[in-house]
Image 1 (cartoon, rainbow over the protein chains, first blue to last red):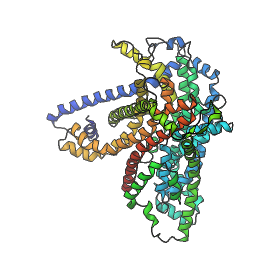
Image 2: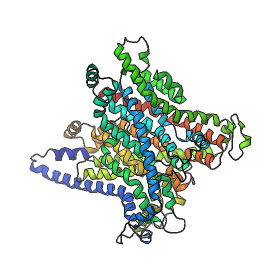
Image 3: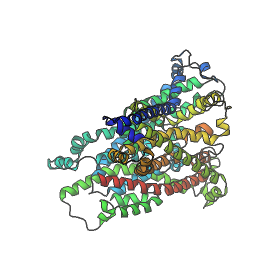
Image 4: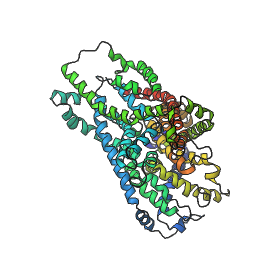
Length: 295
Length: 335
């Protein structure tokens, strides 16, 4: 692949001797071909998502044809049908669990990451190691006692109980991510604040938080995405009252009739908030998801 | 103080690797060596240390309560003879559950399903991720838009992705993949019934390729353009400079991508529950445990599966953690 040389040439246009002109032409042609190829791959990758959104606007009959129908009447009827089946309640449950767990995670993780970033006074590696090791543990290993405990206390199908479990799921990741953002705060700034006589909490709120705010936003977004998309716990621990979107989506699969359009509409609504948020914050997502190992 | 708390609760295997890493990285600050003769702290520093500890504590307590205690209870259950259908017959079982697990045959099948599905999804998504990262690293028309579109599969809710792939893409009659094949004259394929493992791998690869791509793209962008230009002036072709310069530079990013993808993929459950329900070589360990506990109601046996799954994960993770800390500390040294 001629990636590097292409950019090098196009970045520095300079007079080119005649005998090199044909070489440059060839370069241009191959560069154009590569661009076309890139777009083919990109669109192929995006196709299932685009097709899902397109199908959501079709009628059931038009959605379930052997040869795909392109020119057909489009409407919002399928979305209306999805909402008629009470989808709003499930979206609201998802929102509640995601927001509640993310807020609690932030309340715990911001101070923890701040405490861990005050190096080298505190032995932060041990604590960091503990947090990340909890993330490595499969949730399956803890699910049986959790299920039985919630059953005993009548907390199955309870959105708060689900949120608390999401806190456990996201906390390690949030602490890790935020620690990497906090450690970017220049030590001089913190020290200057200490000399000014600011105590720890005013220092945290007035000096450090504004610097790490974008990092906190990224961590919050990732926690929100993971909670919003979570299926295993939601499927197992909720049934009717506190059911969230992911396990409910399956109920649009109808054993007898046609369901492709309505399933696509429900899926589109379910993925929309997170996809939009992810698009807006894509640059921060890398740093966050790589847990600070890449800056 | 945090150190003495953290260790007993860290899963057993991780402890050794902690020690190994800390000994190796002891010089970079922090770590165990600080425990020797303590440098004199001013009263202000002591106060700061106390507060720092107080700040970390709540998060540690919550993490222990939600994740570590249930695991200890799972270990206890795994030594119990306990089926929810027969509440009266509960009792101590010794290693009976483990014997059942290892002699039952389901375990080895499930282990190989886990290795096949996780392994091939990781390999495929790293390869596709690398190709797409290389393509997107060029300057071209609509670069930003292309990147935005490519990362979408990773943001998509796994349950929705599995449903759309199962019914809209891979369906034998109305699926788009079969239509695409019919255009080039290939007969319809019964993806879901004939190739269940492949369908799961396809969805997972589609979802994780963008994640791998993002990490590898970050790696490509951190490569110095001047060295590459110098190499091309010296007459190194694009392929040679890719093999000899870009790939070695990307190595730690590839390791990181494999590690993080591996952690997430080892626990994968959604597409299996939604697309195949564990049929045809897709019954991974987490699905098997779910089935034993919540369909078979065999609490003791399912708990034994849970314990074994954790031990296996720790085995993989302690190797992986070493890598992560290596990258983590070398990055720290650079900055």
